[in-house]
Image 1 (cartoon, helix red, strand yellow):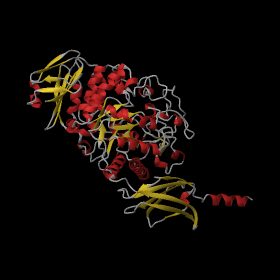
Image 2 (cartoon, rainbow, N blue to C red):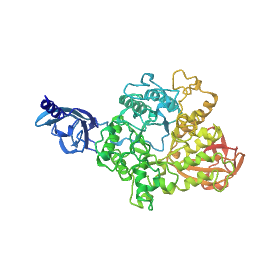
Image 3 (cartoon, rainbow, N blue to C red):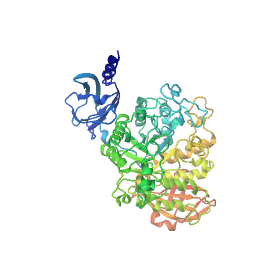
Image 4 (tube, rainbow, N blue to C red):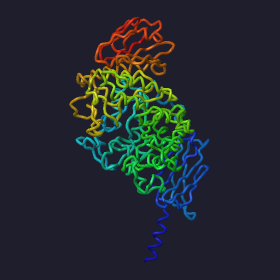
Length: 610
């Protein structure tokens, strides 16, 4: 009996039992034609593998973990087809697996990403709208919905976004950036979904993969774009691989956990101690988010293929990449280049949360700053955090000084020479990780008008955070949940439905009307999208700048002083030239600009020059 039992154990261990294939399918005619397919199953590496249809297996890679096989096949010039992988042990077939090469979307490689002609609407996916209450809690995920918990799951989902696309479009937004939608199966705090447990699967509390594809289709029907929030730096500790890593160094080990020092400057500091640079890149962002090792070729290729898979599968228009500058910088540059090689017009903005223009410019594609040390991240777009820093304090600085008040905006743009492409920068008042603008300034509408006018008319791509357009506030000091409140009207039974004009309060309508006027005006203004910019040193806390082209010119005046100002226009002759009047884009009133312009305290004028 004992001998028979041992024999049974040995023979059963040879059964492949494939439980995961990633990527689950691929496409013909991809630039990334050498696709590396990961098979996971009990002792799968003990088997020999063949594939049908004359497909060439270019490489079979095994690791110390026998439960993984990484098989690279050459799909170049292969028509769409169904393949069969056969797993044998001692010439005996133990398992077969089907694999499909699909037909690509027409002109897929030439898809146009978001540009400076767009306005991006950032959504905290769990907190925007609950379109399908039936998926608020699911059997396959641990954390259940609890709307009374400010840091719990509230039930926002993909269906809620789809149902309110008309609202977003009416606001003047042309692209939607939802926070990550892939599965995050943490026991608590999973609503933000930055600790993902399966990067090929939409979290069932948000919907299905098919729902995500439908979101893209619904956006494209409206001429709008879908931006995926992608995480390259880390996964969640509940990711299915964490209990069965393909390689020991799939994640950074110390062994186990060690936290990043958060000092991103060590990535380019010529004086940085090697241990400090290592701890920035390799340390875990938080204890529940194992840090991925992009210097491991298997990890890097896995991330590249996953990103390409989502773009092709869900017909995406862009990425926002979380914690971009915490990654292994050589690895992340290869990841970015692989994506833009496949899709030359696809846009990617990286979260490079730094407070110095040279340090941020280092990360933008073709940066002269990065070139000093022969580094190119290939990242098309960066987020203008220094502008956001200024926005968070300027409007309480009513008395201008050498370094306070509107001079902060002026000084921010004086450093634009550092960036290779200022039109491809994200400009914003706040996002899901910062204090809300209307919390900082206590819903002061005049200050909101100035800030919105600024991000809508300077160079770059404006991004607005959901609810700001109706005056939503929040205090990060209370906790992240307070800056990520539910959008009023997104849940059945909400007493206030700000998605509809009739459901908005007077204050909400005031914020909404102003926001929609500016963004809808901006839609067709190429002079704002790509025109040149000239600005003038602020005087009396009044900032004046022009956006202009050969055909048109727009004059923007932001008076941050509490007092009415009379501004002589002779100083602006180089930009005013032969123009004699300006039409205010909000009020429609005409203003004579030949001698002087009068503007009320803490107010804004956006003038189309005539």
